Image (tube, rainbow, N blue to C red; front, side, top):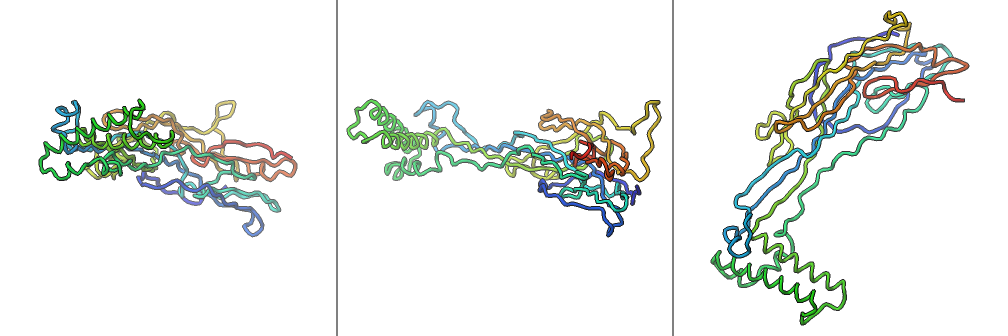
Length: 361
């Protein structure tokens, strides 16, 4: 095998979505002189952050909440907060132009390599196995508050609208709350003058009463809106450790923002090297030699990734990285053996062997 060219791989930080799981096939034939060229992967980390954004707003009558409704914990000042709700870490492989290879097969053979959508080899002489990606969170908008419903408009009486006194409007709103509670009690006890004709109609009336009461109560207690924001940050590390790299920030106003946006609190990533891979050895302890013309694959090393926010570690995930490993090879003749040709499955994130076995007849 011939290595085409080499360059130094640097760490990079970009935001990108996950790629689709499409594959392409490269077949060795006479037109290609029975040679195939491919790039082994360098491992990228996909860190999906889910932030919870909360907005609290005082009600119009917060100063009267305790006096009229006995609410002692009414919201008194507008506030926005952002918290890190979850972290999901995945890996994928990016073609490494510093690890580009050419493999030469026997003439009159037709082995093939399957590449994923990024151009990383995933299989030889077999179709790439289906890979089920873990479910990722989906951003959720804030639900309407009690004051943003049709029932809220129904709850405001004409007397409340006409009054120019905040104190008087608060008193009228509190009176309406108690009226609604009494109406519900009469309906449930069967003492109401106009009882709904059936259970479904009864439930509709009770739901409307509850919505109006909630809206009027929110005028005293205040409202809280909660939404979530989701963003995936991709980091391609080099072969060194990472100490608290800022990969994003959480802003209570704008959600997940760029690392250089100082309006948010930092989310940091650290990578600790646990084991660097070495070349395989013989039974005598001697380092094995790369097979002549071998089909190259990676032997990855091990690391631990930590994501921190607010002064504490919120996720710790062990990963394998090709950047911490070495490259070795398989004799390409195993793929073109006339009696028992072999198949190979590779990890697209690291270029490591997942399965090497004879093709079943």
